[in-house]
Amino acid sequence: QKEVEQNSGPLSVPEGAIASLNCTYSDRGSQSFFWYRQYSGKSPELIMFIYSNGDKEDGRFTAQLNKASQYVSLLIRDSQPSDSATYLCAVTVNQFYFGTGTSLTVIP
Amino acid sequence: GAVVSQHPSRVICKSGTSVKIECRSLDFQATTMFWYRQFPKQSLMLMATSNEGSKATYEQGVEKDKFLINHASLTLSTLTVTSAHPEDSSFYICSAKGQGSYGYTFGSGTRLTVV
Image 1 (cartoon, one colour):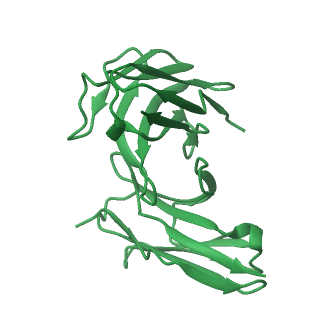
Image 2 (cartoon, helix red, strand yellow):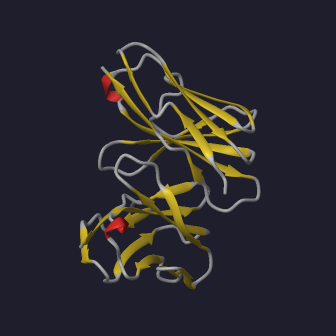
């Protein structure tokens, strides 16, 4: 079983809508959870990290963590075309594990 | 914020030659450096982890004699792809974690094409 699983998508949402990205992980010992955005041909850039159960908001982004369900999500409010990218979920146990990424397209 | 400078951004080399990729942490000390490889439309795959002054720890299936990693200082780590072959063509990315910092800072990546 993969450490981190994401729906590969592609996920398409209209401009201004909420995009919801989901991630599940297998190791209950996972400690830290990250969301990265990666544009084609570019390196990933950190959007948010979360450690505790609940929600964490930063601007248009909200990360949600539920350790009991081993689930972490990222909500993007008021989606913009510039948000179109691949979003990588990452989890740290003894090392950093990345999901396969979800491709998001925001349609103008 | 923390910055990791990675060079070169693109390199084309002939089969059988060696290529060195450098990653420098510009404003923090990178106690640990991670090297990833990413093939098209796939996620990042960890190749190896290096700590300053120690030998790198390679992931299963990664040839340590082919992918030489040196982390001689707290601000510089290098990956050398020796005797490169076309199947080594990929996007190579380094990532560093400073002592006491959250998250990991990625370099800008190196697109390697072996012809």
